[in-house]
Length: 520
Image (cartoon, rainbow, N blue to C red):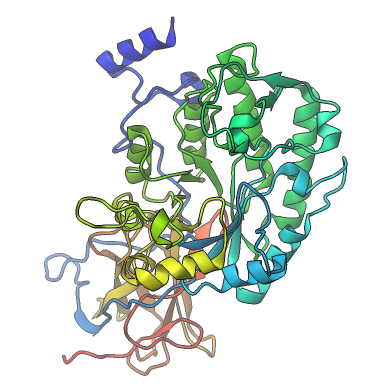
């Protein structure tokens, strides 16, 4: 059956809904809202999350509000979210007259709204010969600065890059792997490399390519899987920049579409195997090149990995996926910004700069990450120039991007067994749900209390209150000022601290002291 005929049939009957992933092969387009991706990450130590009836004849749980918090607007450097300063994009290390590479990178790290950074090197920039990684200086400088500034790194290794004359692949790979010349023409400004270059793709299903690719992933993961320097890794998919397409060319290097799909499911599985402590982000690119993007994307979500897009003004399918993704899945939006020079500004008929429209649409899809990126002109001066003219939009996004967690209500109640319970009404003032599992811990500095448990995956969401209860050991006065509450996010078995986004005072370790602040 042809794919187009299959799509018509399944859309008419709804037959594709609920099929097991292994039976689907190619995944037809579908609405993401209410689509069955499974129940998400496993929740260990699940806290009781209601109901909490107030009066008999049901059990008495409700109790009395003893403490509240209100939203804070502070910039939060937290795993799973952040404004992201681009250190190196498609053209490699920043090349700024009068500045060394180290100085240019340091200034990008220092941009005040950036809590994360991103780097996108070509494969040849991290490996020169088989069996050994040899990083270009800008990679090494980025990792050194990440440690200095406490800002984690997101990255992708590019296997193909249409914007440079040399091939993205190392020479030792080029010597052994057949290359396929794409059919067609990419028309545009003849002064730009992408329109001058003969565009080729490696035979991705060649056994030598797959062996070299897996070796590279294994060596890279040995150094960085679970490293405190790493935030996430973009999956390397088919085609230009590894983003899943070779538009506008209408062919690919595989014998059939099915071979392409099988190959990229295999390449995805390689990456997921080695990066078992680091989230993988897969582009939501529609399958223009017919290489299995829909299957890889489906697998990404079912494995608890995350999503990204390379612009915000894009196909309906990408907006659907980003804005209706499961609650526990993060989304990164990459979209180039104006450098603030008047000749590069683009205004609509309301006089609103395009950058401000980008920011509002990033909020519309509930993103976790946003790119501070000036396309092929990466330079901290450009970020400062635009921010100096239009600070409000970026400041507003920085104070709402991702998830911003707080215990809005804290109730105290007793039960028939003589226990004291604290019920936390958890709220999320951000635009994205929690991309994993939120763990709460109630503790005292002397170790007499150390109670910990988790909310359901994705909670608290961006509307409503998620209540969760902890029972305090006998003899502990909940109003003594000794009890403290802290939060962590668990992703792929790794825990990361989550500071509460509140206006009230926090302890130096980011925890909140439990202490009545409302009259009884």
